[in-house]
Length: 342
Ligand code: ADP
Ligand code: MG
Image (cartoon, rainbow, N blue to C red; front, side, top):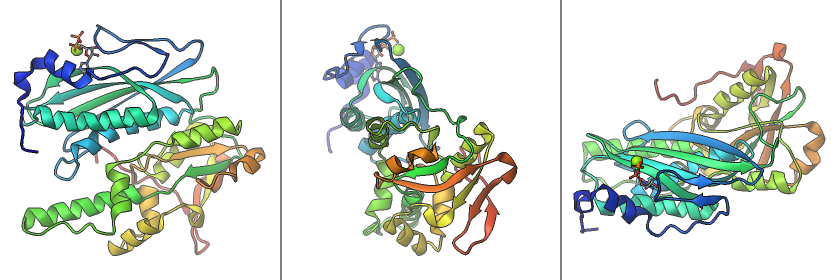
């Protein structure tokens, strides 16, 4: 792209108008969207779920290998994942951005292309936000709202002893995608002539750059009249999330290593880096899968969905939080998940 329009040619209000002028509200609950002092939403007797997340350049993303379009998409998706993790349906988002003058209008257009692609895919309305400048770096804050029938929300703290511990999809891929991108970045910084060698790593790189939220799983729960007893999304790594559910529900658990779902491409990628695929699934973050517990009585319903793996079960707290390895050894589960301050 050769064109570059300075944001100053539009000004703040011109920019907001430029970025939001094509919005067509899709949800009846979106009463007033962009263009006033605040948005108005009506959830018609449903309960509202709200979540917010901030992404900071250099901490959560690196623009050297993150296309802006993907970043826009991901900024929305990671918030929707938190709404689904409550067993709710996302309906609206707001997005606030702080940018330095290194960004052009064209760059922001790319970012918003991703934002709108995610909004369309997940059926949510962009109803507002804020735009300001930053001296250095790009900061993105998204708030997502969702609706749910009264009392149907699922917390982390309500798992029961004997419940099955389950995860959706597969784990560890995003961490390996990031590992590849970081390696290629370092090679490039040392020798800019070398072309990135990412052939064959499409799956794991796609999982870090363009994650999806598990809308399908929450729809499956609804369709099957299956109410999980506890749930959260996997943003920091499976072990960290399982420990959260155990701690907040005051329970222990047993996880079987051989039941943890890992994609074949993830396994191959791990071997290239001499990493243990299970360790990547346990400690790598950003998979945005759902980890949840269900009553044993719901097992028959559960097995109908191939996207769900039963990885273990909940125990009394005295039994501790254990993983049984493929070799039959038992270890304590420890959290080595991603941490913004480590
Ligand atoms: P105020 O001064 O009342 O905060 P703004 O001028 O910041 O109003 O925003 C005007 C309208 O544009 C509001 O509806 C706001 O939610 C929306 N808006 C501002 N920035 C963005 C953005 N980056 N993306 C989407 N909507 C935005
Ligand atoms: Mg404002």
